[in-house]
Image (cartoon, rainbow, N blue to C red; front, top):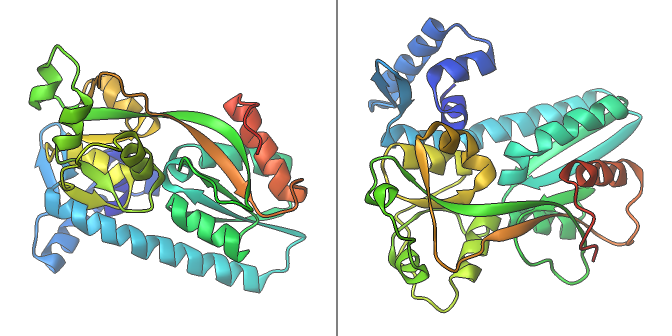
Length: 293
């Protein structure tokens, strides 16, 4: 429940996602708060959001939930022999915002294929491709190692966001690249495609130490909403909050953070079978037919 509040931004939405009545959800969170001895939710008449302590706890809880899901996937794979298997490794942004739609469409077209989804940062996805532990990966980092084939399936853009009370939310002129580099930001962990893209874009500037490192875009988004500080995130991660005005976009003069989202795999160049079918589906969905490498 705590991870879902982190992902969806409210206790009511999290309750709907897990199929639990909101009073039961609230009691479950209160039991967790008593167990940890810290407040995890900030409650108000307009809803409940994670506290700073709750954001940190949710970050580590997410790892436990992922491990539990992997355990269940392994147990299911041992229990039943399937006609076809597809193991997919996806970076956080792709896994959170694009993969659910892609896998939903894929399952309709290929209902007999058993899919295992692994969620990592882009560096870890590439490591799993190199090790041969997945059939295909999806990354957001700008560089693909030699010996790995890739295909651009979609485009994304990183944006600078602050909450409505931040001084930059009322600023009329764009932030300069130098100002952005000198400002402590909420960032993803090293190896994340989002962080790598930003660091490359700011190459040549002296970067301020991170304000806080968190393991998901959702965790950073929640921290920005709570006024912890500014962040550069995928537009996919913040589009709902920008639409409602809870988060504000801040222009950065002269900085283009458009990036390619790529499928990656080991040789041979031609990707066949369920993995190739998934990549073709993702490419159709992303309306991108460029950059085969």
